[in-house]
Amino acid sequence: MKKVVKFGGSSLASAEQFKKVGKIIRQEESRRYVIPSAPGKRFSGDTKVTDMLYSCYHLAIQEENFEKLLSKIRERYQEIIDGLELKLSLDAEFQTIRENFSKKIGRDYAASRGEYLNGIIMANYLGYEFIDAAEVIFFDEKGTFDSEKTNKILSERLERVEKAVIPGFYGSAPDGRVKTFSRGGSDVTGSIVAKAVHADMYENWTDVSGFLIADPRVVKNPKAIDVITYRELRELSYMGASVLHEDAIFPVRKEGIPINIRNTNAPEDKGTLIVEATCRKPRFTITGVAGKKDFASITIEKAMMNSEVGFCKKVLEVFADNQISIEHMPSGIDTMTILVHQDEFEEKEQKVIAGIHRAVEPDFVEMESDLALIAVVGRGMKSTRGTSGRIFSALAHANVNVRMIDQGSSELNIIIGVRNHDFDNAIKAIYDIFVTTQV
Ligand code: ASP
Image (cartoon, rainbow, N blue to C red; front, top):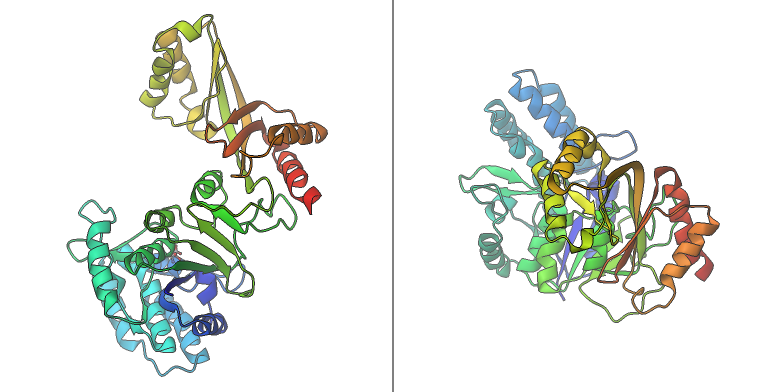
């Protein structure tokens, strides 16, 4: 059994957190490859080391004094080293960082030092080999992750290493310069390493016990999701539920490696298992419910629209020409509605309307704003009768007026449009009918 274990910033924010992590790793021999993030927040209002590094580098490029901030960063690491009673000095490392900042070596390099230094500490603490991610994770000239080169070099290297720490978030470009993934990118590194070593499991340790069925800011103490498929997760994270970096899914998904989201502060919790497919029956009919606010809808009406060849194409071209992405597109016989992000649309509104008039000569164009979209997602919905009936009667009881319905052809989700101000009530009502009343 081989596991890749990634620990997020809050799991590594202090010596105390490091000790919890050490205990988790030592508990299972199979936890052989460790991906650390940079130290995160220790308390609310604290600053992540990555953010401190960005600010520090900003001072360096303005040719302002960055020494004070660099010392503060250094203190964060020293506190961890002292708390773990390690005989480790980062003197030389900080000297190199100082010199490189003065040379204005690059923003990505600056940010990556958070993970790099944490990796050195982690390797020393565990007695694992340290592998600099710049030597094994590669990007191409365009700055895109080079999966082929990485997989080849990384798997060859790790074949010879029993246990290693590989810092998350960064790699190197063809010219040798450090390049990072987007924020939260250590999740991606973990996934890449899991693929390279053909891991049995990719454990992603964070500060929550997995994905929750609904947003805890809307529903009080929502239940956690035990098992979710990659497709369900895509639907939910698209709608704003986020624990994992979106790009972390692709490397492991192709290899059929499951991801287990776990809680460093509650290691006994099983967390959420993300899998390609499962025959395990879901606990509830829905796997999750999530949504986003602030959409606008444009409804176009024209008699005999259905028989006019190329009608949709012409309308969609107007949106494309104005660089507006379309979120949903429910249609009727003589109407079609386009849902877009309100903020993106507002400034181009009149141009788009004029474009539509020119393109298809509609009878009528109507617009509405302040709409919210809610996705009810669940692989269990397909085989359950009456799901939509239950959703809509729950919404009716909660006095929520449904503005739009769109069931994905995969039967994995039902998208419901409501007014922004009904958003919370709608989510609560859906959660209650499928979860609260079932336990
Ligand atoms: N430390 C980086 C960030 O704050 C990457 C990560 O934590 O995954 O975004």
